[in-house]
Amino acid sequence: MKKSNNKILVTGGSGLLGKALQKEFPEAIYISSKDFDLTDQNDVEKMFITHKPNMIIHLAAVVGGLTDNINHPVSHLDNNLLINTLTLKYAYKYKVERFLTILSYVMYPDNSSNKPYQENEIHNGAPNETTFSYAMVKRIMALQIENYNKEYNTKYNYIIPCNLYGNNDKEDKIIPTILNKIRNAKEMNLKHIELFGDGTPIRQFIHSKDMAKIIKKIIDNNITDSFNVAPDEVITIHELTNTILEILNYKDINIIYDKTKPNSQSKRQLNTSKFKQIIPNYKFINLYDGLTECCKTNTEK
Image (cartoon, rainbow, N blue to C red):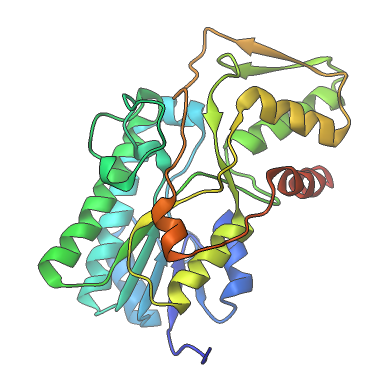
């Protein structure tokens, strides 16, 4: 495959996925909040004038776990709306040819049946209340992309992945939260950890390395479709926690569930038939292997 002439700019470049992309696109420009404030219109325009990209991989977002979403809905809504709207607006103004952004499967309706979510079901009901603000912003971003394509004939697209995880993940998400609780329990000689809900919610997980490789395939093959991305494997929060305890050989630690706290959605699973047609035969990192690597990296501190 011939070398691409694309000048790629990655927003949110210091995050988990941004770091994974650095191996796939070493020549790209990686922007973090230390470089530009993407909630500020002047800063966003300055970013485009300074770097003159012709392709954007938009990862920047205010992200948090369940507790953060519940306690800080304003920042999850307002700041993300500004970040997305301004980045998209000035990408179009400065004639960026390709714009790819990563959304989240929390945006799917809470009232869906147990069948996996399909791409055409995004607006078929309200998202779960625990991540409502963040989910609505992701929906709006999907609509913004579709509107630009419709009105201006752009070739912008989005990907909807399941839960992202990886090495040295410091974000307030499921796997880092469980790892931190286990680490703290060992340091304090506790025999248990406490988790929200009852452990029954079903989830999917994708390693940041896989997500980065899939993004590279999308860019290299000029794929402009929008679609779900996830491995077929599903797991409950209880099974996930026990797997991590097994990998760490901490089987003496018990799990206590606080059932007064929310579970969030009971099942989040993506229909990936479209992905499999567009990028066939992709082999994901096995979750157990990915968790083993993740646990080793996150405990070597």
